[in-house]
Image: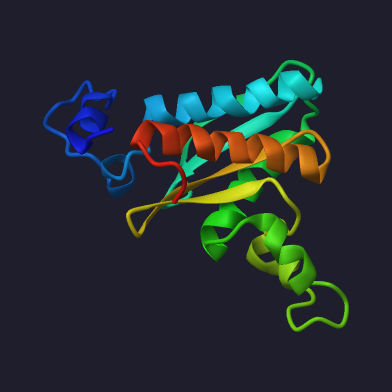
Length: 165
């Protein structure tokens, strides 16, 4: 999708405000809603109620939804997975081997007031070399959450006209 088309998708009622860096990179409210829908589709296929958080590059929520039946703890976990992926610029599942007892970064998960999540379900969103934000999914197993997060990333890639980035 062209950048002009992405800017047309801005839900911007105040036209005098310019887009944020995340919005300019394609992480608009419309894009975040599509990402959430893609993750929820996976949740429905797996029969797992999930929470999905999409944050911008400053860790501010762009969009969030908790499916009916999702445990309340998933609200915070989804947001913290997005935070962790954003802060580390890497999938949260890739952190697990680095923080095991005896590993160099053992205890890393205690950083940031305990917000650092070191199991799967969080993915950074980088577009054209810009860290636009992150997505976090919680509700299933680590593998199920990752599958839903991957679907969310694929939905954003599809909007941008990329196969993968």
